[in-house]
Image (cartoon, rainbow, N blue to C red; front, side, top):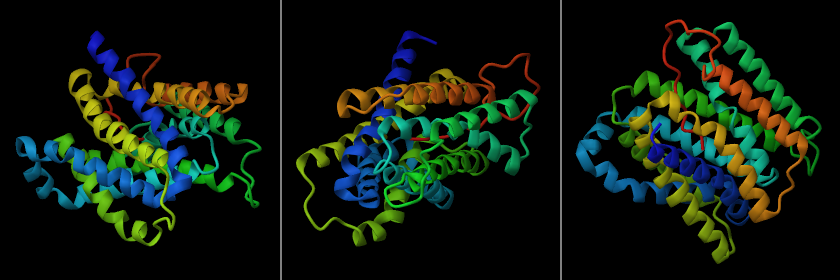
Length: 302
């Protein structure tokens, strides 16, 4: 990997890791759905020049329905669920749960597309989900004030990322990925608009919350998607997925530095176990030359 691509990889991880920080700041002020409506609508506006360039608008129109589905299951629903989760979970904790997305992607590919799961990939799933159990053990109370629903929401969000990655692989292979990214943000904004209007906060959020929204939409979504797809073009999806391993590092770092969140040994240990499981599941560290199987779908999971 060239130094320029390595810098882009770290920058992308820093941006996507910061998304949990900005959701943690803004979600209590706006509510989860209005916040995400602003995120995807502003990102769609920022990505509009990308959509209009190079015939991408034509590609988006020709694939409008599957792009709308991707907008719903890869942005609108998981973003809203993660915003809800950050009402109760720290930014670092939520970012660690987010790292399970590639494992869900492999599991969905096996169940839906018939992709082969080797013994090592099965072991990776077991290790990774064992790390999830370690992380959430004792934190899944469903009584008032408990974080059980938040944990479930975050895991459902990562499951949706896995479904979206495989749906994209099945229905949008060959379509310009930037057209898919920009068009999906438009679709997500359309899907969320009615609920966001109904749930709009009655009191005006402070300037700090609006600043978090702007950073979330423009930096963590619009700029991040452009970086992500350039990275895929330069180094390929198998190497680009390595960003998954850096996102929780930055999620924990930003939460600790900016919000003063506690970083516990259990969180660090569980993060290491989940990432080890992810590495095995995605075939990043194969023990031998892998058999010829379909390339894993890469989820856009932030």
